[in-house]
Amino acid sequence: MHAVDIEMIEPPQLSSDTLMIGKSQDYPAGHATVRHSHPTAQLLYGIAGVMRVLTARGQWIVPPTRAIYIPPGHWHEVHMLSPAQMRSVYVQPSALAGMPQQCCVLAVTPLWRELLLAAVRCPPPVLPGTRAARLLALLLEEMEVLETLPLALPTPDDALLAPLCNALQAQPDDARSSDDWAARLGVDVRTLQRRFVRATGMNFGAWRRQARLMHALAQLAAGARVLDVALDAGYASPSAFSAMFRRQFGVVPSEFFGASDEA
Image 1 (cartoon, helix red, strand yellow):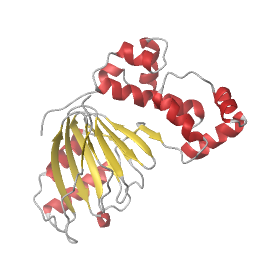
Image 2 (cartoon, rainbow, N blue to C red):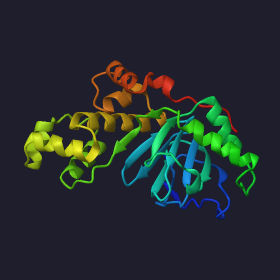
Image 3 (cartoon, one colour):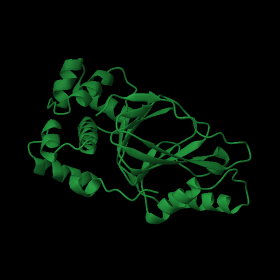
Image 4 (cartoon, rainbow, N blue to C red):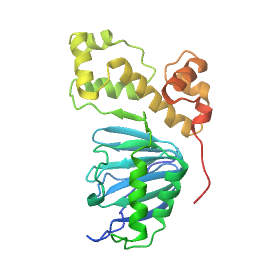
């Protein structure tokens, strides 16, 4: 992967009476944004390419033909793990009734994809009562029925867990058990598990499994072989890795990175 190129992404400016505005940008692999936030929500869709989105609460992997919802005011960084074609719709908070309060990766239906791409092409300003405003309302309504994908890795806000989590992300094939880590950190294993669940919503084993899968997704996006990815993530064989991948995502790795045409 190329060295990371840091650049601020400035969203288009929305006047107080404009409900949304769209933006199209393509980036090379290795490009990244600096940490930033928007007063609007962002619906970020990848026509092609794989993105890693970092926030205060964790990280998300966004494969091609999926989307991520970023609520207003949430700082984030976007890292391109492969050449990426990004299409964004920025939405005023006044139009967001019922939308999630946290980031989430969404499985995109053909209808929702076409609605978002049409919204990107709407010329500003998008005023209440117009066709574009009705299109936005349908886009948000259809978003409510999209499947949320398990592509998040929570970042624990816990000083005890931070070195453990950093180590597992740096070396995903680390096989030390929760008992081993509890002893290393000087706490009872039950205490370690309770703090993991409280900080991340997952137990130690589930968090480590998710960290391995997120690491594997990033490597697969960069073109690595399944064999190499499986071993690097700590699995005994490609078949064991593929079985875990299918249980988590419903498909084997070779079927996961679909792409659609330029728009």
